[in-house]
Length: 108
Image (cartoon, rainbow, N blue to C red):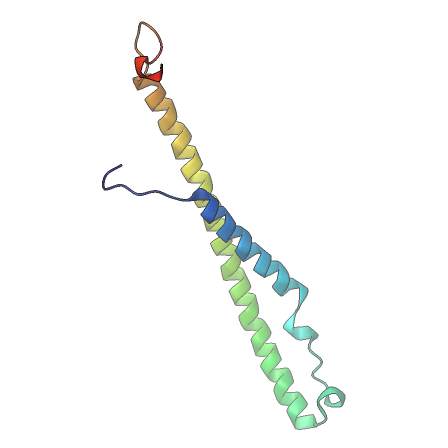
């Protein structure tokens, strides 16, 4: 279609899947699981600083994960809307391409 655009639905689906896979990996490896006690780090002040950093880092990761879920959901919804629109337009065009005396003459 001249001046139109095309949407690669497979690419949108793969993008949503990629975001969801990344979120699954984030869920499997939590920042809060990092050992930040003095015994692991060898110094009390360092352990406190690392623990504080990890607490803030976990909050940031949670926010990014929430945003990622929204991105994946919107990509998935976009695919569903494009498919719905394609089916709707096909139904309209099917009616236009049929003539009252039979099937579409161009289809043969």
